[in-house]
Image 1 (cartoon, helix red, strand yellow):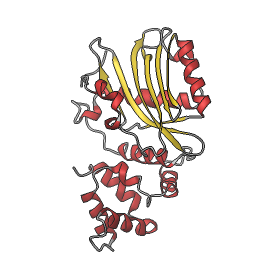
Image 2 (cartoon, rainbow, N blue to C red):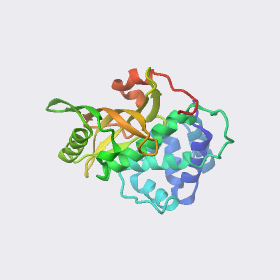
Image 3 (spheres, rainbow, N blue to C red):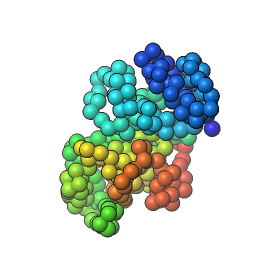
Length: 278
């Protein structure tokens, strides 16, 4: 299935310039396994659009360097910090492209990504991981009787921890993050974070991403958050239960996606209502 028009426009913006001409042509040749002789940039971009099915895979290729992505993000989003790994930059480029879509009239969602439950999931994921990574997550952000089930899979074995109360959950999360020096890089595209509803009417956020230290990408994470509205906190959605898997990997994928998460498949089979949530 060809990539969407949103990504096609983004690729044109990213690669159709004199500075990146050589990269564009090399990418096209690589994508077509050097079967076709391609020298014209317009022909090269057409080949990419016809043969590439996954925009994450394309931007993760070795030819698309961190420096290339860095300069593009710096030009298009100069107000944000740019001290990121390549995986971070790939995610930010894709999210920037997705935000350039024309705003459609408020109506029935034209596609699944626009369902309110997925919008809630994306907003929650962005808020939670930003606060967690910056050490700003606090007790007030959780329900008092919050519960956590945490599994850590590393080369030296498997460690499972369970706890209840917001204080214990926060303590375990912070201690684990500091112990390993992790930064959580969530995949905030629809392929990496979505919403579901269980039989009790609770909103579930399923999310995944990669784990990083200051030096490299060292693993992946897969999480389920159970959210409930808090009438005493402006009716905001707050996490009541957490189930998280942290897994060490020598060569993790650049962008971990939900379809690769074995631990999340049961939750992903739950319904995703397309109406507004009370």
